[in-house]
Image (cartoon, rainbow, N blue to C red):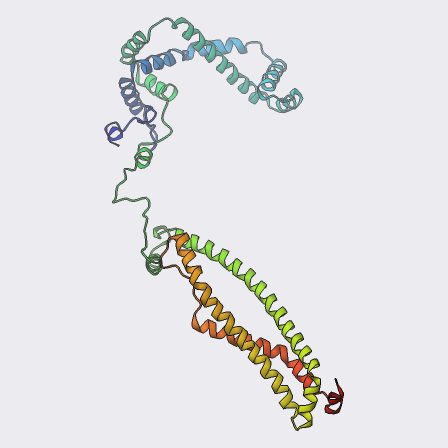
Length: 373
């Protein structure tokens, strides 16, 4: 951070200068920036910069070479050269490229060809300069640049600023933010950590109240990471709960059917007993009530046993949960109201399952029932 603060014009990670990001620079500003950059460069960097400057051909010489290369060139020859060149570069068939070029106007085609020739002339000129200066030591090239900078005009410095200098892709503010150096009075983000879920809701309500009184551009945008995670966990738990409820529902239906079948078998096996009860004065309601009472007792007993076993199983389950998770206040439990509701549901289901068998028992003819062995 201190190194970047001491040199705000240079990217400390790459050593490249920062480009101007606000507005357009004038030629004078570019001249000042170019000379300042060259002054702060190392010897090797100065040598490389000088080679780049010398590799730029003078405009008059460049135009003369390009005009000479364009002299006597007609459309047919341009199309042939461009087709061969683009086909080799792009790796596609020459027929499609030739068809595309043939649809271009003369003005566009000649302009495209002139640009290609200009790049070739620039490359050839730069290659010649590099060949002629390959034996010159970097120290001498750096010294030559120092002497030449004082002779450059404002227009030349501005041109070299655009063509020669290589700028960092980052900015001073980006680097300072990357290094973690921020201004607390102008935060980019703020992280709030709530101690409880209730306090998290208080924070959300406070933000919502603030946003309701300001315009859209001044509203606070936030991401509730805990809420997102809890929502995902809740969704997963709800899905598992629905699956378990489906299995339990099937189990309850099957159990109810089995209770009804068992009660019906009991009625069939106790036909003579039913006949005796009817013969000594028991009414149909008395017989039906007897079997309903039996089913209610079965439902109450099974429900109470289920609740008792659940309470007993919670003891080892809680021990295992605490040992695996290390959370001391994590425990499984069955609330008393829920336990009572489960017992009532068990009684109700068994009662419903025994209605049909009890009515069947009540409708039996006492005479026929007494003859049954």
